[in-house]
Image (tube, rainbow, N blue to C red):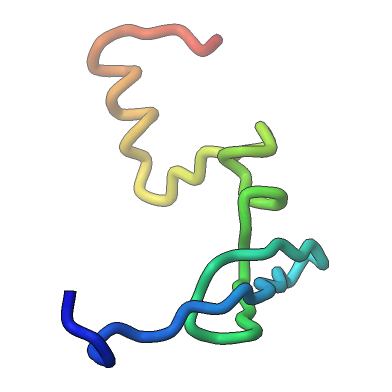
Length: 68
């Protein structure tokens, strides 16, 4: 590898809007994110299906699938 071409990595802190913090290896000392694995609906199990255009209901009617 060439010298003085690659950035220097330091241990930085990532802060989420929910309040959680975690350490990563990055080029910045501090970063912020809006959503992390602690508060993301997919990881918390509180995911709600938002069906704004009725696609899910139309699919269920088409294939006669009952709601679970």
